[in-house]
Each structure stands twice: as structure tokens, then as C-alpha cells.
Length: 547
Image: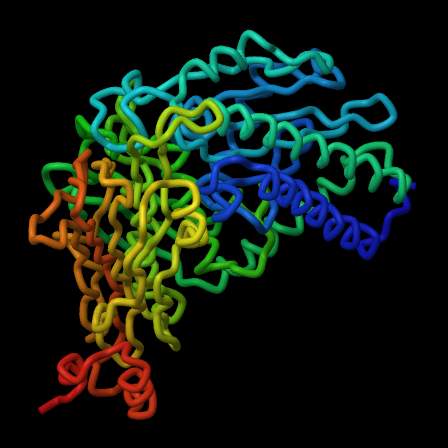
């Protein structure tokens, strides 16, 4: 039947393949033990051909996982060639440079068989809250301090679980129950993907995925290249300064558009630093191409074909191409800023396609402390996901309390209070935090948290946009800077482990996004609505008054 497939047949199969990987992701979402996965969707799932090319990714997931996983499967194939694979094999790693950027992300890859033949691979990633070491924060001085490192190994061989490896994993985490459960969750979601793929191939009479893969990849690449052809050709540059760990960091790039695609070169970016905010090139590439895809071809499904026209380079030893053993645990703090840097360059070529700068990096409350030993875990460790506002868009306001470019959902307060001994006294939008403009930046949040058991707890802070808030453009104002400290007045550093004493409230003010256009040109009805909804105060409204 493969030789007689029509374009319509292939298009239907393509959509079915996307449905298969979405079911794969939903299995992971519904079976994960870690709240950051099951409640917030910090995961990825995808199907690959036997050359390691991603054919489809689940809509559920984050770009940092998906687009770095897209390359990691090639490394799995280097370690486990196709002719050595057998049903029941499962491969695992958390290598930051050949995985998804830091040790907390486990990547599992499973070969998929149909009628006894290898036809593809399923891969998935999720964030595990604790894998030992110093913990999920930026304070380590090398990657070896950051936790357990798993090289490319077989988690299972021929259906037999590697009990020795599982024992090693359990022994190197403060959350052995959660961590073991998350590993099984990852394995289960790939198993479901393999089963659904075989069912699909039987339904459509496919012996292999070769014809379908060629259709997906060539059509996707052509669609992206058609969008690139509409853009002016040339090279544009941009740079952005962010807070860094103990000194500001410059993120610089040149963006070149030509007949072969788009090249982003991070030459001029600051060197890697001695703390864990460095970024492996795989993660840099993941968020850079995501920004390009959003601005240039947002309607084209994400796969190896649609990613092929985008090329990313960076000097070895720079903070965006950090070399092992650089610490990388909080690589998201810098990596998630990269779409903003890309947009600043692309805006010069296509101003109607890009937003103003936003909060961009997640403002998670990474908290850790003592608790009654429950079910085998040692204390509690949790990332309560939250964010500030996105930048205003060319024709719309920015989004408030929205995790762009990450895409994770905010952790429900009820979940955080159920699994930690903390109480959230406040979690609400932060008035006046969005940059004023014709289109206003999105708002940040005000969050207040306290221990309810009279014990101190640690904040593993990894925040930015405190000293360098999101910039507006075209006359729009900057978003409000972020801040973190105690209700009693003590100011915390934006990065590093700090203790919240018993009886004190942790206060977190997440940043706002930048505005676009002169504030006095904002629609009066939109301004009135902002006042009525208390998104801006009477004092904040003065920014829109040209007098």
C-alpha cells in the first residue's frame, strides 16, 4: 500500500501520528509522581524514525525539553545502534550536553517494533525534582556537585528491568519514592506510544514509516522555507543584559536570513560563569529555534523538517555553549531569555512579528525543608512554578502570569499546600507591573508564603529581571522589575540558597512584561477597563497621560 498513498492519505496519517504522541504525553502527565510534571506539564514526548529524526511531538510539553530531545535521540543511536535493539529495551540518560540541559531531566528512549521489525523510536523527558547533590539551584561550582549523573545506559533489556540502576537512582535522591515513580512513568508513556504506533500502522497497512516520514519532513521544511522567503535578506544584531549570578551577563547575537534559512550566532555573548546558570548548546538551540519558529512559521508542526532551516552556533566556553564540567542546574534562567534576544534582532527585519521583552525565565519557588517522613522521602522538595508577564504583542497586550517561552502551567496553590508544609497567604496579579504602552505588557504576581509548622525552609532562588527588567519598545515602557525577600523587610538575592525563618513570610514579586507603543496612544476604553479591573492603579494611569 505504501507505493499508492495519496497526499490526503499521508496527511491523515500525519495527524494520527500527532495524536499518538499526544496520548504518549498524556500518559506521562497522568502517571508522573512529581507535581511539576503532573500538574504543570514540564515534559516532552515525541516519535522518531530510525535515523533519529523527530517526526512529531506532543503539544503537551516545553520547548526546552522537546527541541533538545529532538537532538538527543541521535546520541542514543550512537550508543545503541538499530541492529542491536530488541523489543523490551529501554534506554536512559540525563547527560546535560547530550540530553536536555541539566541533570534533573531524565530522557528515556524506547525502540518501537511492528510485526517484529524496528520501525521507529519513542522518546520522552520529564523534570525530576531531586536527583541528589547540592539540589536544584544555581549554587554548585561544577556539574558533579549538582547530582547523580546517568550516562547512556539500558534501563531495561529485552523486558528485564535493570534493578541495579534503579537501586542507584533511589539511593541518590532525597525523594526516592517520587523519583522511582517518575522513571516508571516515563517508561510507561513510551510503551503506550509504541503500542499505538503499531495499531496505527496495522490500520493503514504500513510496513514502515519511510514514506510517511519523507512526506512530513519535506512538507514541513518547504513550509518553513516559504515563510523565510517572505522575509528581507540580511544580518541583524541584538544584545540584552541580564542579571547573572553575581555580575551582569550580556547575551549577544547576529541573525542572518538568506536563501538557505536562518542562522543565529551568539558570538559576543559573555563567557560561562562559575555558578549553575550556564547553558549547554543543546538547550540554547532548543529555545533559539523555538523563538524563530514562533515568529516565522507558527502554524507549521514542530519536527526535524521544520527545524532544519534554523542553525544555531555559539563560541565554546560562552555562557550559551558551556563546556563540561560547568554547573548547569539553573540553565533555564539564561536559556529562556534567548527568544527575547532573537526577537530583538528579528524585529529589525520584521517588526510586525515580534513582542516586546517579557519576564521570560521562570520564577519558580524552589523550596526545600523538613517534614514528617512520609512514604520513604526525606523532607520535602518542590518547584512551585510561577512566572511574570509576557511582553506586549504587536496588536495585543501581553499575557499576565504566563510562562512564555517555557509553556509550563502554574502550580495550583492547593497542590503546593497538600505536598509541602507551607501556606500561601497571597497569590494575585501585581498591579502596575506591566509596562505602559499602546499595548500594555503582561502583569506579574504577588506571592506570599510561610511555613505552617514553625520550621524554617530553604528557597533555592534562581530569578532574573531584578536589576534588568523587560524592555519595552517603540515608545512602550519597561515592565516592573522583580523582587524577592521577607515581609519584615529583608531583601533576598535573586540567586542562591537562602533560608526563610519560622514565623516569617516569603514575599515574591514577579516581573512584568514591556509595553509596545507610546502609552498616550492606548485606546481609552482599554485604559478604562484596566482601571476597572484594578490591573493599573490611579497613580499608574498617569503614565498614559501625555500631560
